[in-house]
Image (cartoon, rainbow, N blue to C red; front, top):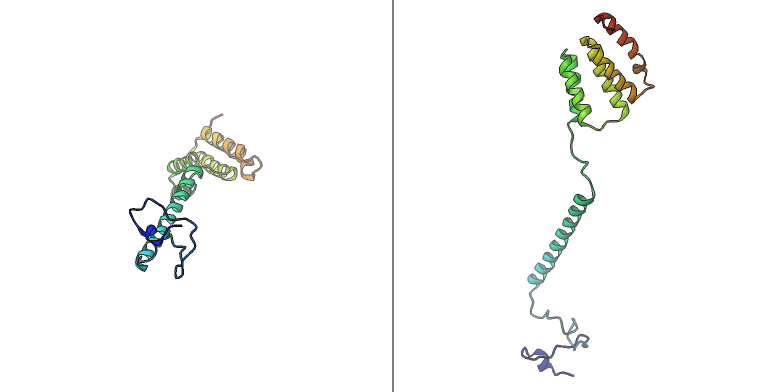
Amino acid sequence: MSTPDEIDDPSSRKLPPMNREPEPGETSGGWLPTAGVSTKLKVFVIGLTFVTIMAFGVFIAMFIKKTFVKGTDKTTWGPQLVMIAEELKDKGLKRQAIEHYQKYLDTQKVDMETRSRVSFDIATLYVELGKCDDAVVWFLHAKTAQPEEHRVQKSETQIQQCRSRSKTS
C-alpha cells in the first residue's frame, strides 16, 4: 500500500487507488479533492451544470419539434378573408367580395360544409351580377362539396331565374 506522502506527491507516477477506504475525518473517500474548495465555487459549478443541462434539454426539444412536427400553430389569414368578403358583399361590392371568397378557398384547407357555403355565396353573387355561366360553375362546386344541403338544392331555381333575366340559354 502507498504511504500518504506518495499519494500527495505531484511528481509521483502512481495513481491513487480508486476504492481506498476513507481515513478518519475524511468524508469523500479520499480521492475526490474537495478540501479547500470554496462553497461559492461549488455552487457556481452546480449552477452552471444545471444551466447546461437545461439548455441541452431545450435544444433537444426544439430539434425534435423542427424535425418531426410540422408547423400548425401559425395564424392564418383565412377567416379574415371571409369576414372581408362578407363586409364587401354587404356594401354592394360584389366583384371584390367574389375575389376575397375565391382567395379564401384557394389558400385555405376548409371542410366540405364551409367549401359548399362559400361556393354558394360566390354563385349567388354571380347571379346578382347577371353572370349565369359563372354562377353555374360555383353552384356545381357547392353541390359537389355537399350534395344534400338545402340551399344547394334550390340553386337550380336561381340559375333558371338568372337565365330568364339575362336571356341566355
